Length: 116
Length: 114
Image 1 (spheres, chains in turn cyan, green):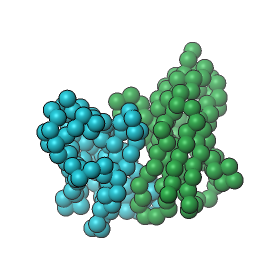
Image 2 (spheres, rainbow over the protein chains, first blue to last red):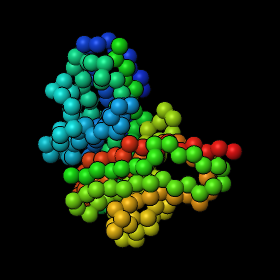
Image 3 (tube, chains in turn green, brown):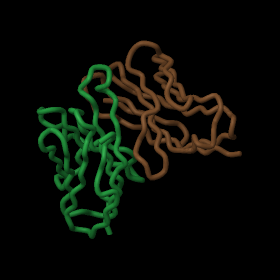
Image 4 (cartoon, rainbow over the protein chains, first blue to last red):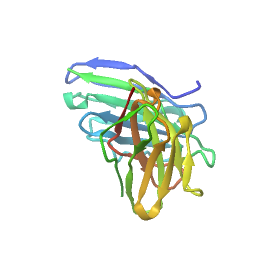
């Protein structure tokens, strides 16, 4: 597609349930990032994948959060045993492998997660 | 380690007036600097970026920003505000490299009044 896409756009779940959020990066982009945007914490980095390298997981807030990227393209962010404080907008971004463009991240529209 | 400070969580200007959104950064290495805009219920859109070279960078929608190393600042300006500029603006910093996470400021909500 032309841009980064994310699904679902909105997700309502009950406390304690697991959720999966999906990100489709721009075709050919080798780097993929997850961020979280919440009222209390602003925009926070969660995790990023760069090609076949080990992901940088330094931003994941707890071991309930995990992410994978299959085939170097689509990524899934999984939150286990959701808590109310996980309510936020989860943003995905990707960036190109091309020199001069690698530093520019293109963002998807986000998934709005509400944990009841 | 890097950090970004955006002074003023809310800024209100009249249509046609100068827009000035402030951003100061802290970085242990020469930074890459970005401004993103977020319209309601949408993702982030890149306005402009500074990596190397000319310190005055021009972006989309008539915005520009100047990298001032001595002041560790990257303020965003637009000579004449338009109603359509009303949105939230985020300043961000990353470390130079092939790919690097962004560290964002807390954002400034710009209101444009008639």
